[in-house]
Amino acid sequence: MNYVQPRSFSAPSFSAEFEPAIPATHRKSRRAPVSFDARVGRGGLDRALCRVTDLSLHGARLITYSPLKRGQEIWLTLPEVGPRIARVMRVDEFEAGVEFETPITEDDFDNLVER
Image (cartoon, rainbow, N blue to C red; front, side, top):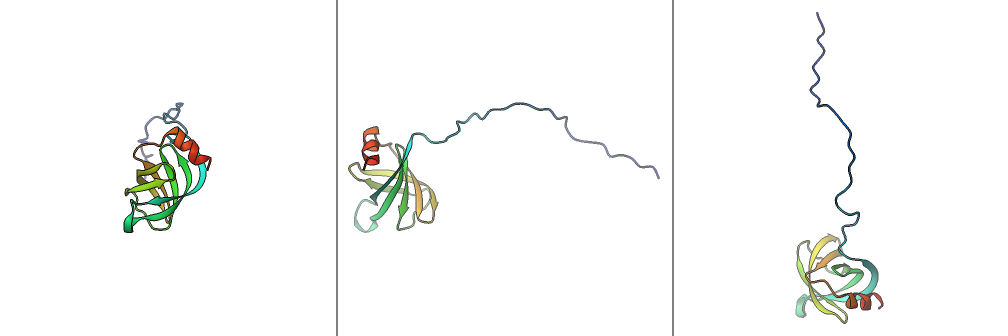
């Protein structure tokens, strides 16, 4: 019996250099650790307290006392800024990351960080 070596079907290989096209950070703006209370909801029965633990011009990280769902739009009332529409981008039990529909101003950001 003659042994026949199988043909190799692999493509020729070569090496190349690459560089990521996306910047190292996916953040749109600077972030700051904070700790202050805010409200979720416009008032009435759907209103709940939350704690803001991280803030940027474009969003915030919240500790909530009631569950939120990814993709949900909420009203988030920030102290001295007022109500803002925010979309829940990620959820991990009672922690949520939200993105503001309209970014807060640099002045509002600075005032909230200095609290």
